[in-house]
Length: 343
Ligand code: FUB
View 1 (cartoon, helix red, strand yellow):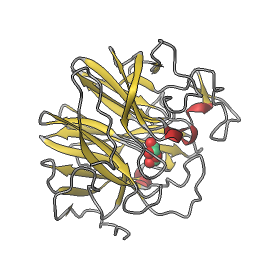
View 2 (tube, rainbow, N blue to C red; view 1 turned 180 degrees about the horizontal axis):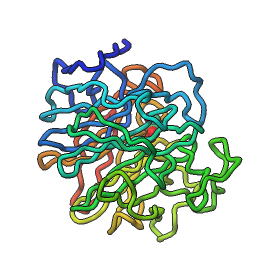
View 3 (cartoon, rainbow, N blue to C red; view 1 turned 30 degrees about the vertical axis):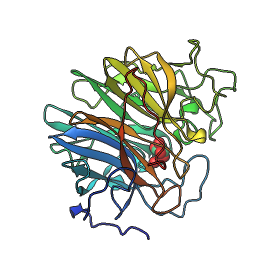
View 4 (cartoon, helix red, strand yellow; view 1 turned 90 degrees about the vertical axis):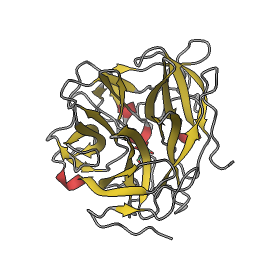
């Protein structure tokens, strides 16, 4: 049945524990979960999917979201609290539509929500909003973060440094840029995509500045290589980067995971620096129900968890539900591939 929308400020707790491939919440549709541990609790920053009349297309126009809710859990398998609306489209001065996959970071007791939205010209930019609390409400900056483009921001903290990682092709518009400049006339999901034998488009990374609201360096492309040290090619659809970049560190190695989009995997690659290069290793997550696949990986109380979504509650691609499962790094550093339907 269709989840009911919660009131804006109500704190909603699920009645029973939900874990291991069950929807974490059922009262609203949620997707693209970015999980972090703040104040000793698991906080989840997802997209908030809603029903829309916008027709489905390869630009993802049917993902027409208008606000964000933040969720928290004191323990795995425990109740999930919905802290209500943390940020609304109408409060973001520069944005016009489509609040897509967000992420969050904490620094010196302040919380930062990074989010993509289309500006008034229909171009995706990445914005930031600030709060004193992990659950918000977040106050958006007046302008998007200078130097950002495309969507799906993820923040990776390495000791005292914070990196913003982002990008996505097709609806994510990354193919409309050359040397980080928007090329006029590119409008469709395939306009500007490299040929199948050319290097694939890759995600971008840049250090965040001290204030956490700007970039402190020019963004760099993160190279993803195959087993021969060659950049993954655009026609290698089962391995090339599409969207949903995420970074975590395990045993001194950096792991870049991402969605392969039209082949529906969450793939991963390992490197020695957040800037890469990264070498492709395999899949974190097999395809899930629904077109999109989008995840995060977090360590909580000594165990690793994968957060992801599928469409179990609705059966419809733009109406997703977030889930979680334990994730295992094998002794050789590889990630044990998860198939969410084999329990
Ligand atoms: O939720 C909207 C978009 O769908 C996200 O930004 C993508 O990663 C995909 O999950």
